[in-house]
Structures are given as C-alpha cells and as structure tokens.
Amino acid sequence: MSLSKTDIGRFKKRLEEMRNKLSASLQVSTAEVKKPDEATGYSQHQADQGTDDFDRKVNLELTSQEFQVLRQIERALEKVQEGPMASAISPAKKFPKPVLKPCHML
Image 1: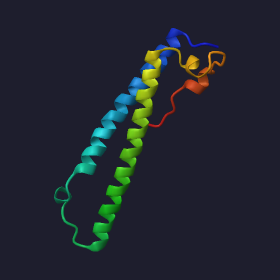
Image 2 (image 1 turned 135 degrees about the horizontal axis):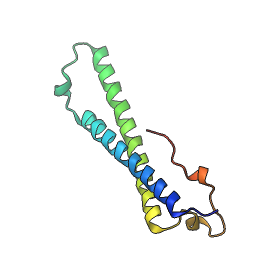
Image 3 (image 1 turned 180 degrees about the vertical axis):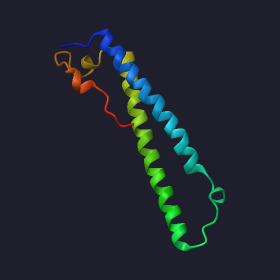
C-alpha cells in the first residue's frame, strides 16, 4: 500500500508542527541552561548548591535529547522532500500507515 499525496502532506504538516513546538521548547531550555549562576542567585547552603547543580544537569540532558528528536524530525522532513519514504528501504516493501504516524513526544 503506497501513500497518497494527501497522506504525505498530512505527515509533513504534522512533522512541521512537531518541529515548531520542539524548537520553541528548545529555545526556552537552552536559555535556562545558559543562564549564569549569578542570575540564579547564590546558594547559602551546600545542599541548595547541590540541588541547583542537579537541576542544571537534568536540564542539559533533556535539552540534548530534544536536539536528537529535532534532528530526527528534520531528517524525516528531508526524506519527505526526497520522495516516497517506502522506496528508500525497499521498492517492494511498503509501510503500513500506522507505522508512519509520528509519535506524541511533545
């Protein structure tokens, strides 16, 4: 079963929506990670400093994962521009539509 132009357009639109949401989220996350320590205030206690460091590490990891997802979305959009996605793997093998639906990560 091959995808119709309508299906491809729908998938492309959904990928673009996901890219836009993720890009906006990344701008906020990146700004939070890049915020200097002086902007957050000085922690008076070692435990507070440890919590601040942990939060920063978690934000860095999440931002890194979001960048990976963004790269995957960009690659999927490139594949849509290149042509039928099913023919990239095997011309004889067609993907069912449910496999091609974007996941709801956002």
